[in-house]
Image (cartoon, rainbow, N blue to C red; front, side, top):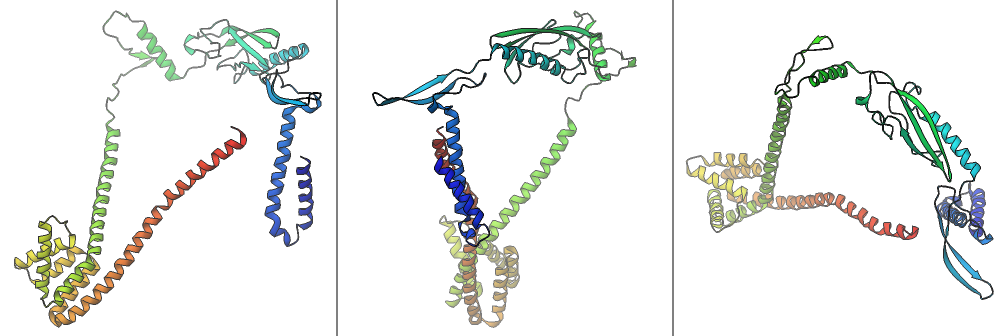
Length: 427
């Protein structure tokens, strides 16, 4: 402990001298940390010395009455044989002297006189439960209560309102106080006054009384027609809370509609994502067929034919090719080619497909060569956009994984730190 005190004094003096200098900013954190640990060392040494109770001086301080037995570890050193043993000592708690016991019993009686009424005004006006304790004087004196009328008030001090009469009832209390080897009995009396009942309680009490006066062998109970001087009209309680169910039904309907709308929006968004991701491959394939010398209509029909053949072999459905198939069917049923292209872009409802349709319509006028160049440029552009979209989706996925990673970090830190603290404090 001397070393810790020396370090604390040195650090305090050093900080006082260097507080206003620039070097203090560099050494502030290490100095404060070292000072804190040195202070903890002094406190730990002081606590250890307090627990031992001056064992090196040949004395051990007992615990105060009620503190229990003191269990401590000591080292016994035998000088002549130059040997030492580590033993466990159990020191009983200190007992009160007779004069201390009598003083505590007298103080407990005074405490009972001051606290027994609780929220009541006096011993003659006990309306609510009095304050009954099992011990007084901070646990130094134990108490055991007895009451003359246990039907009215229990040993725990709870008043039974149904057992009260209309007039005040006098009850005698006897409490046995014990402190060490001393014992004293304190007796006193108090009056329990029935609490003034509300109009509702009076009405219910009168109705129950009238029903109780009827013959119990009768199969039919006649409900009282009057109570408190007023005529009674009896009604049935609603068996089903219809308004509550109606309110819950309205909330459930709104929740269902909102959920259905959310599902529909998510479905449409997934469809748009699939159309957007399929666009580069669609444009690339169309450009390849046009470069092979096919017309726009022939290239689209060839793409539809290839998709239907792949689908018949068990391939998965593709949203853009399903829309292409519907467009070919419309053209076969007499719809104009330009009109079919426009309907195709409206069903896809994405800006890249609108641009593709505008290129196809202009291609009817400028020819396939100019259209092929435009489609190649469009294919290069959409492939770049697809890479950017994939990168953005990857960043969003990484952001969503950030919270679970933080939770896992907290759990791992807890697994590492908690056992370390338990080992330090010897738990």
